[in-house]
Amino acid sequence: MMLDFELSDGRKFVQLSQLPAKTSVINFWRFDCPPCVREMPLLADNARNNKARIITIALHKPSETLTAPDPVLAALRPPTIALTGPSEPRGLLARFGNPAGALPHTLVLDAQRRPCAQRTGEITQDWLETAIARCS
Image (cartoon, rainbow, N blue to C red):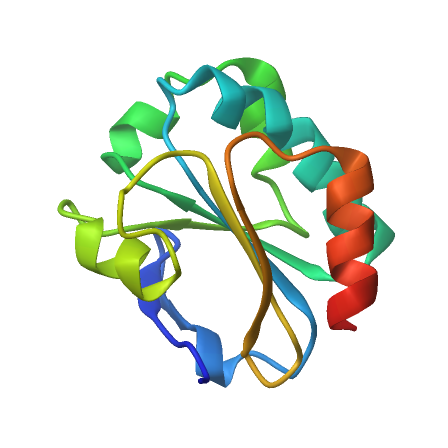
């Protein structure tokens, strides 16, 4: 099953299916979720090493992202693709393997946008490296 979405980065809409084929890590988060905030620098480091595309999807108002701590704001800069999800995210989360809606939720897609690894809860560097390697 190929997954897709079209979400805003604050300037334009980004459609997953229109991005070049590449292993992608999709992370759903909120500014008031401590484990979400803790894993942001890890995601940014992995975006910079370019082994996978890192896409973060904020499940809150864009203005609330601005209240996140500085390390989170730094992590959301390119090459990370920082998007904002819908105001009612349950349908999107369910489609991406998280019907309960718990956060953080991270999904790794292969280059054809098929899910090949996922985790609900805080990720670690070991988990992320293993998932990216398995999905590449």
